[in-house]
Image 1 (cartoon, rainbow, N blue to C red):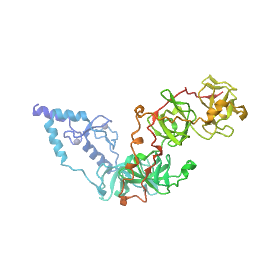
Image 2 (image 1 turned 180 degrees about the vertical axis):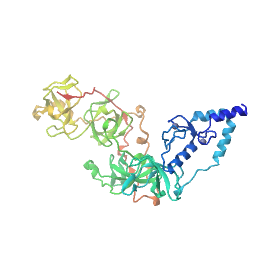
Image 3 (image 1 turned 45 degrees about the vertical axis):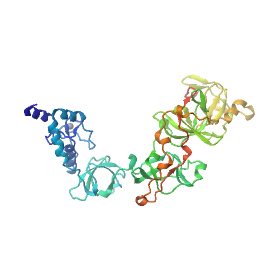
Image 4 (image 1 turned 30 degrees about the vertical axis):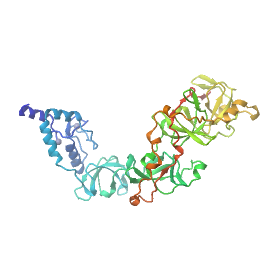
Length: 464
Ligand SMILES: [Zn+2]
Ligand SMILES: [Zn+2]
């Protein structure tokens, strides 16, 4: 290629800001024009620090995002092919410009979070924990300019703060004051623990992979769990021991008491009977939950990955409908205009679903959640003796251990994390407040959960 041709090619690959060859070519979605990443950042910062909202340097009038897109690999490799020597020279020049540090030791464009609430007068401008980007030193040399992802007053302008008002982001992507839930029983000492499913608030970072959480004592804990005192002080937990509090697949939550809505099968073997109680341990995938089902004979639990339709919430049966009670349907039970159970059919209560529904087993049909208003209790002498007995012992989950060669994918952190890699932070000098390290009880490291298939069809039952 002649120098003249090369100039023409270089022109095509030039940045609209510095007019030199594109370095880390970044293409804006607003108008498709490309600029050097560094040039765009400088453009954004200059505009922001002059009190403006940065607009596209290509002149299209749109706002430029502070979080810039990844640089274009295609443009970069085209330049490497067509202008290898010019590009090499340009990169070498740029390397001499070192990473810029600003007040507080932060790097320009470093991701940070607000260390505390930022107020203008009496009004909250930035909430503690909000993520942001350091744009650079303020002209006064004391403050740094930060662009927060979100401002409480809706403004898109940057904020000038003293460096101590920002901090490095928390490990695990957690935010200050975020509500989190314990994914395991967290043992603090031999007689103090945070039970699985406890909800807490993130109050700080502890180390590169631990955060400090203040858990709330939940009245939902069973009597057995309350036997162990609950910590009223912040504890440090590994980021794998908690997750953001949110509904799981099917609207269930961590530690929720549930029951099998139908007999659960592995192959041709029923491993969990309908009505068997269990506890939600977590989400296995976007369609399955890991449940620890109770096996009352020896007090152990068997874990299975089930689909939301295979389980129902569990609660104590409503008054008048205890487990094993015989009932009579007072209405035809319909599902989408199809008669499922005739009025006057006898069934046996397996358990409660919520304050108004019970799980009922009818002869020749899968168990169905039925509103208690559609049922009439039968005198106990008038029981369907066999079914009632079956129901009373319905929690006879199979204790048969399924061979590990049959096991399907198991969440890594469910089985591979042992207590050994916890309590590793010996240097307590940088401890945040009086945080304690947490150890995990082995109660839930039950065999690798395997996927179950519900044995029966599911019905959505409307009371006629
Ligand atoms: Zn440029
Ligand atoms: Zn544009």
